[in-house]
Image (cartoon, rainbow, N blue to C red; front, side):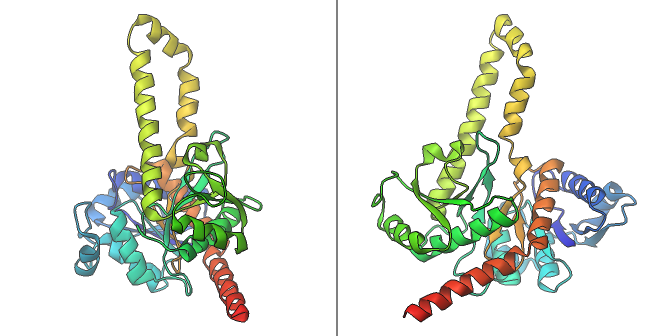
Length: 335
């Protein structure tokens, strides 16, 4: 198992990236990791770990860079060289916590799409009250979408949820403004009809307020709506914890109460921790490409590596390609 990682991407690079990589190779002796970035910064952190190699470059893509231009012009950037490792067969998958747009561009230009997939989808796993989580796609790889794109998202998400997350017969829902049939925009109505015919366990429309209740294992929508839903969930969680903290720190009585429920609050925060779910997969590409959260710590990097490893082991890319091919052949026969 060979995984290439952009060691210079993210808010805490390269320190937390390297720590996560070290933990991953300790947990899996068969794992080979290539860290791409400034060797002067990385080497002192890696020490003598034999399963980790360093591909040196001082160039990197920042959050301020325009994604497409940066990928085309910064040929020696750590993220670009990372994608190159996959393209040229020296790595089975790649991970970056850097510029999301640049990673999508590098994935499309260098790794390439699965044949038959019209548009890839950015797909994070978000927490639910039962701890199982759900997959939301797309959350921004494509702002606009057509009904057939949402069907492809559903197929990719269903395969991933079954093969990597271990969910038998994943429930697929369509994000909408109501649960009744016939609700929503023209896109939603067309997607609903097509999803009923798709080879997934489609349960119908789902509302945003029910997502964290675990109403579905896979929720599909266009990138515009998905990104708004994702940012709303993240913002609400951060705001709620800030409000709870402020309340508990307001006076001596509440501070005393905080001490009594400290462990329970830590458990609740852990239940909502993005780091336990790895990163967001760029589904639809010819090899696993994982976008780790920009603020990823070592734990998040470790889980992103584990996520990428499972995708390679279960040959998710091939299974998606086969499913899309079968649908296209069926449609051709009908025609």
